Image 1 (cartoon, helix red, strand yellow):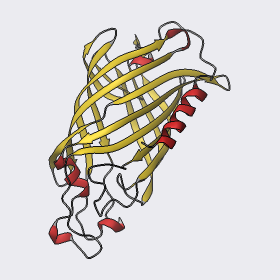
Image 2 (cartoon, helix red, strand yellow):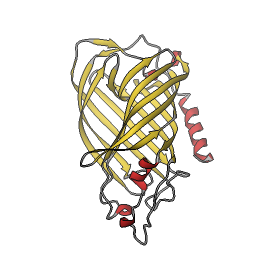
Image 3 (cartoon, one colour):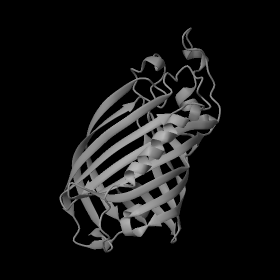
Image 4 (tube, helix red, strand yellow):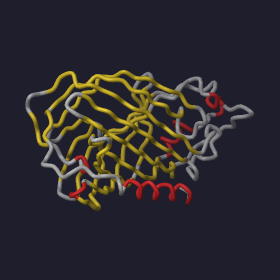
Length: 285
C-alpha cells in the first residue's frame, strides 16, 4: 500500500473518531434465531487484478443464529472454539464469486467457479474504549480454499492478517455500527495458479504462458456500515483491493493494479424466536 493510500486511511480514522458515539447501554439481548428475506446489489471486479467488473443483483434468504458456539449474523458464519477476555480462537468462513466466462483477459480459458475458504482465526483485542463503543482488533486467519466447479476441488491456502477498527455511532437519530479493516494477503502457489496461471495450451501472442508462485497476494481495505431494528436490517459495504507487488503481478491476466467492490443489502425479518439471548458486544464478536 502506497504512501498516498496510507494518508487516506489515517484521514478516515481521524474523521471517524469525531462521529457522535452511541450512549452506553446494557448488554444487548436479541432473538436466538431470525429469518430475514431481502435483496441487494453488488458491483465487483471479475477477479482481483481484473480491469472488468459486473453488477450482481441478488435476492436472498438470510438465516441468523446466535448460539453460544455457532453464530450466523452480519459478521458472517463462524464457530467459537475458545473464548477469553482478550483473545478468541474462531473457525471462520470466507469466499469469492465465480469468474465470468466473458472476461476478455481469460477469453478461451476454462470458467472458474466460486471459491470457499474455511479455517481457524485467532482474534486478539488490542484496545477498547467501552464508554463510546470503540475497539481495535487483530485478526489472524489461515484458511484452506476450495473451488466449486463440476465438483469441489482443494486449491490451496490463504492468510489475511488484518487490523479491524469497530465502533457504534448515531446518525439521524438512528444507531449504526461501523467497521474499518486494513490488511495484507498471502497465498500459496496452488491458490495463485487457480486465478493467474496461463497453461501453454491457452497461451496466445497477447497472453503468454505463465506459472504463478507463492507469496504476497496484495493489500485490502474494507469498510462496513450496519443498522438494524426490530423489523429490518441495512448494510453498506465497500472493499478496495490492490495487487501492486503481488507474487503474480506480472501475470498476463492481471490487467489492473487495483479494484473496488461495493454493495448494499436491505432485509426484513419474517420470523424470529421468542427466546432471547445476551449477545457479545458487536465491537468484539
